Length: 77
Image (cartoon, rainbow, N blue to C red; front, side, top):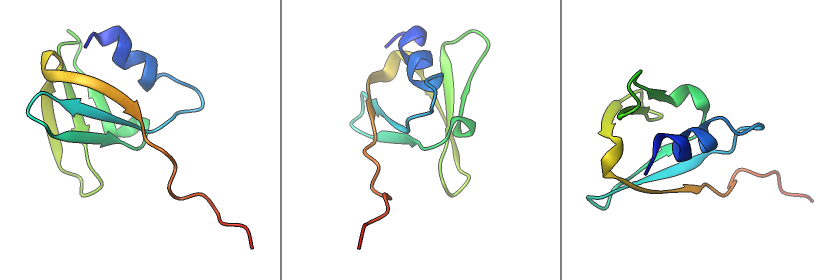
């Protein structure tokens, strides 16, 4: 995964939440742009979850990114 690919998702307007898949089989969700930080060198990212726990990930371990489908859409009556 390259920093340019990540920034493409991160900078999309309007922002579309996305899932980051990691080489060890886990995934991290970025539900808002404020929940992701990119270090100045662009090699490490920090993802914060809804419980305010931060995890640093080496970008070389990211295997793919996928938009998260909006499961909170309003249902029509």
